[in-house]
Length: 322
Figure 1 (cartoon, helix red, strand yellow):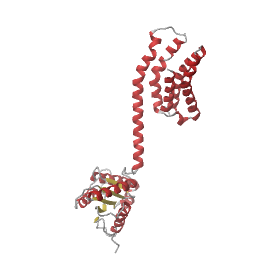
Figure 2 (cartoon, one colour):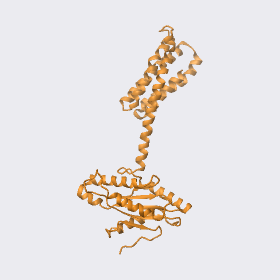
Figure 3 (spheres, one colour):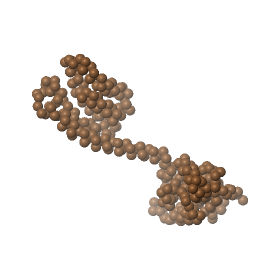
Figure 4 (cartoon, helix red, strand yellow):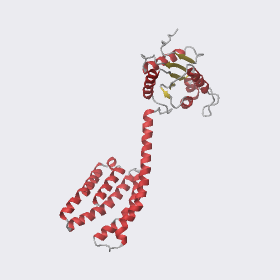
């Protein structure tokens, strides 16, 4: 019984994150738990009245300590500390009865004999539900943190290092199976004009809408990534037919021209993009050089405002400015 009490104090220490709030309190709770784990050996060796009194005092004080730790942690911001205190309450209220009966303070009766069992029957479902809610919230928070580490904070798209990783995998599959994949670099052409006419807030909203449009056009297996302030990369997983990239490029341009209720009336998204195929024979290309090639192509397309779509074979050189 003393071992269970000591383990319960250690559980409260972990559940209430005592070490995060106060180092001295954490050391005291650790020492209290270790005392409860080791004292049964002393009790079995001595087996006298003093050891019996210490055993009962430890149990009673552990009830007070666990409840106090939960309330203390709750007041310091641990939301589930208060719920744990309520969950422990049935056993905390019932534990003194057998202890006081053993000390001769209360008479022997079914209440003093079965109080802890009744309290445990009430406590266990409560604690299981509270711990389930706590674990669920903990996992959701960790999932959000992992998502923040791998997504662009404004648009929610994949960050560029993840794109590089998936692009290398796509090129590896392309070489192995001999099929084609595709890579597009999309630029929001009128982003600077939106900033000057409508302000930074509307421009950022336009980027979010652009990211949403690209994600809507892409498939679940494809990757959409924001690679610059107003530029996006779309990795289209294969196998692809020769005309699939051109059709996708036209679809993206048309999608940007649709009106959006969240943007000012008459404001559309003008996309300009360059694309290339990733054939199996492009063994000398790497992910960085492919992205740099598309960036250079978009920079050179700025000289001809009428050209909004350009498709390059994977092995073609970057056109030089005239």
